[in-house]
Every structure is written in C-alpha cells, then in structure tokens.
Amino acid sequence: MRINEFTAVSTKRVTLVPYSAHHVPKYHEWMKDPDIQAATASEPLTLDEEYGMQRSWRVDGDKLTFIICRPVPENNSSVGTTRDGQQLDLTSMIGDVNLFISLVEDDADDDQHQLLLVGELELMIAEKTEQGKGLGRAALLAFLRYIMLHERLILTEFQAGQQAIKDHSESTSTLENHGATSPTRFDHFAVKIGQTNHRSIALFESLGFRKTSDTPSYFGEYELRLGRAEAQRNVVSDPDSRTSALLDGYAEVKYLCP
Image (cartoon, rainbow, N blue to C red; front, side, top):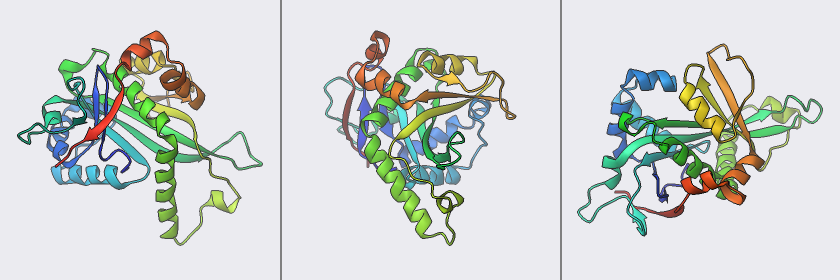
C-alpha cells in the first residue's frame, strides 16, 4: 500500500517505518535463518526476488507493512535519515509487522451472501537479541492503532485495487454473481501461528485474540481472531493501563526516504 509511503509511527518502545528498497538486503539476510523460515512458514528467496516482493508490498492494495525499528529520539519531527544521509533505520531494524486484507463470504449468512473484510496479521522480531523484551507486543499495538485510525483510507485503497483487478479480468466473481455486498470496515483481525510457537500464541492471546479451534489445522497452525470492536477499544477508545504504557508517545511523523 502507498498510504504509509512517507509516514513513520513512533512510540517510546518502537518505531515503525515503511518497508523501502534500502531495507531489502538486511531483510534478505534475516530470511536466510532456518528458525525464521520455520516460524514464518517461508521459503528462501533470491535477493532479486526479495526486491520484487518489496515492490509488491508497496503497490498492492491488499498489503500493508512496516519495518520495526528501535525507538528514535523524542521530539523528532521526521524519521529516516541523519544529516549526512545515512539511514538511521538500517542500524535499528529488528523485525516487521504486516497486514493482508481479504474478502471472505460469511458462512453464517447463506441467504444474503454477506462479505466480510478480514485483516490477517503477521509479526516478526528477527533480531534474536531483541526477542523476549515486549517489543513485538508494542509494535503490534502501534500497528493496530494505525490501522484503526486510518481504516477508511486503508480500505479505500484496498477497494481501488480490487476494482482495478476486476477491470482487467474477463470474468465476474462467483460472489458478485450471487449479489454479495462489499463491506466498508473490518469484521475482525486474524493471525495464524504454528502450534509449537507457544510464545507467539501467548502474545496474541494477551491482547485479546482467541483461538477459533482447540485443535490445529491440517498445516499445524492455530488461527486466532480479534473482533473489530475489541481492537478499536483496546488501542484507540479505551486501552487499559498496560496497553497505554506500550502506546505511550504514539505519533505519526514524516518519513524521509532517498
């Protein structure tokens, strides 16, 4: 997505910056780690393929991503470069957080063929020295707040992308043929986590996500969900004291990228 192309999210615990081309070499090194490949169910890519993926994340209307960095000094009005042009975020990169948007049919509403907007989340703290410090939780909360504050614009970009795909397609979707209507806000957020990744499961459960089943899927994953209303309450309208502390200093600032 382009909505965050020039925006960074800053808190006292973490800074989120848009995934840009200069991040790719370090990201590529992260993804060579077998432990990260297993945790993210990813296959290794070539460096050229990784650049292609970064471009896709930037332009596709169904994907939103930030690189997670250590926090920047307080009162900065912008993030990205030092005076001599060196990228601050290259030395402070620790992971990433992602959103995939999809439309699914509501199985419980057979007559109306209602569509639901689902936001699937991914979170990775790649730097092992930064794991277990609560930075993943802080990054996820900041990301969810950004999403909820900009939900309308995010979904406008998503819908424009879907329309462009439709315009270039020769066929109409089955859902459209049956009169399905498109929603204007998220129904819920979801995450899929390997059944042995107990630390990640505990993190998401601590933020209100709940398993959809007591048994893992065929692929050995649990799906956990958080309803939109609870997400709104947790990160915008009525966060508890622990959440408020992790969101302390939340600000959206200009991102400078070469």
